[in-house]
Length: 163
Image (cartoon, rainbow, N blue to C red):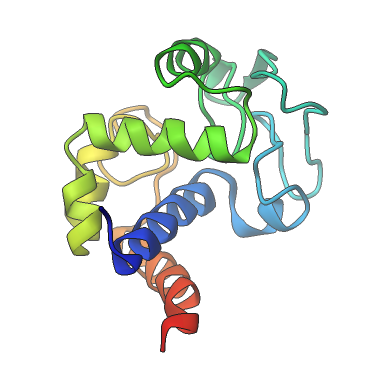
C-alpha cells in the first residue's frame, strides 16, 4: 500500500517528466499534454483527437522521425506493448500514467521517487526520456536544478490539501 505522500511524489515526478518533455506552455494549451503529438509547440500544438489508442503518427522533428505521443511522449511500439501487458483499455490519461509508472518501475527508480530521491530517479530514467539530464539522445536536456524546482512545485501542489 502506498501512502498519500508517495502518491504525491509519483504525481509530481510524472508532472516533472511531462514539463521536461513538453514544456508547461504546451501543457497549458492542451489536455495537460495527454493529447500531444511529437513536434508540437505552444505556438503550434499538434494534438490527437481520440484516446482510444496511441495515434501512431510519425512526425519528423529536428532530431529525426518519431511516433512519440501523449504527456510522456511514449513511442507507439511501447504503447502497444504496455497496453497489452498492463491490460489497459485505451491511451487515455490514466493509461498513459500507468505506462510511465511502469517504465519508471522497470528502471528501479520507483523506490527513489517514493522516498523523494528525485535526482537519482531522474538519472535512472534518463535512458527513456530524451529531455532529462544524462540522456544519450543528442537532444536538448534540462538542468537537474531546473527539474528539481519543477518537481518541488508540483509536490507542493499535490500535498497542499494534506496540511
